[in-house]
Length: 579
Image (cartoon, rainbow, N blue to C red):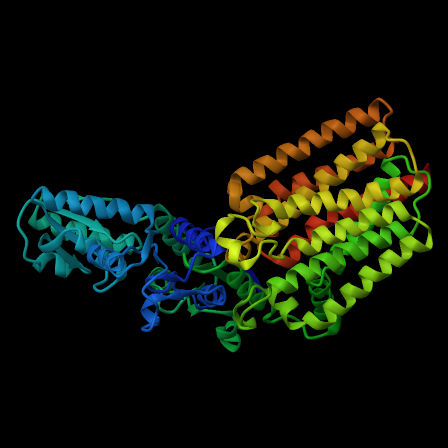
């Protein structure tokens, strides 16, 4: 089955901002954290939030009258916010900026004597909030007939709930113009909503069936499903991959896939992978390779092999005459052990609602931890066997830093005094620590063992490893943005945003191209430098040409990103044989 994924699928700006705010509050640990109503209409994300202690206040009748309450993106009626303040809660407003703009418009027009009509669904949280700002001068309409019959006086102002059906809104506006030619029609439908609705209409005409992923009670997701059905295309609205009607979908060869504004990316990914499996040939030759690749990438074996390849290449680039086999093995063990330990510590909650990679570590925690500890001890024993004492000290420090990444370093009673209580709390720390650790393990450890002078080649090799691994890790983070955000990891894409991150790492990669080319041209590094430019070019192509395809799957993204490290080892091997 061929699946076409909509480019607009996933979290909208308002949901993303609300998620960022509630996670930031929870990280401070200053008492209980609540949301007023489910933060988003998605069971998987809500389940993960509950695992972090973030609960829905309306679902907690015996909740203490203290702590922080976050107003979700839909907003709330004015009197609700006031009531929360009176009850002793600290209220944080995470109402979507576009909803806030509509609230201000309603309040202003009502004060000016307008009758304000709101196109939306009665009793919807956003609509209730809008009505509260207009009082008696507000009326809700949901169809053109209601617009023709609603009792109101001029002047009249019409605006819509931000996720309202755009075509229906135009019909309501035309019906009002028949009664009130001077009616003010406000374009309040969110641009993201407009883009999603337009894309789903177009996509539905290009495929044989549509799958819409999102909460069954989510208004914007339901709207997408309705629009897809309106084109005559068979449409399936599902919350998770488990809800797919495999038998019904098996008859289609081309299927479109989109997701609501409150659907996490990993949920959409799992549905995408399940759809691609439908109708696949049963023979093992077709089925096993993908499953094997998925297991290798999610268990970190693939990344560990890539680190070994990078160690081999960087040692040659640094001018180390002989690359002892222990050092690529140490890099392999380090990446596997440290990454596994950190991911197991983060894998909390119900496996059904976890991202695929996190669920993998939760399900296989014990064997993976046992293998990690075995690798950790084995790598240190290997260094001792070749009497690499100075390198051993550096590797032990690298292990200590890696293990400490997710460990709380501040006593519980002092948590409220510090903004950052773990290394992972530092903004964009994950990719920086990974790059620094690999620089030490791949280049500095072998260099210390050889007792060489600090040459320009060693410095260039260190910078090359740092840039290559930092860019590689950031590309993976671009695919994991929503997973990281829900787990409280402040990676570079979360701090800077997707577009700025891509520009920054592209600039970093191009700068490294220049540095490596100049260093090789003037003889600071071996001629291998010319070949290793291919690794940097590979990353640039991945980042800009194949980016949309890469980030659609955590497995594909890891395969592609770590491919740059594997390529460096392959090029170094070719160079060593031919030199």
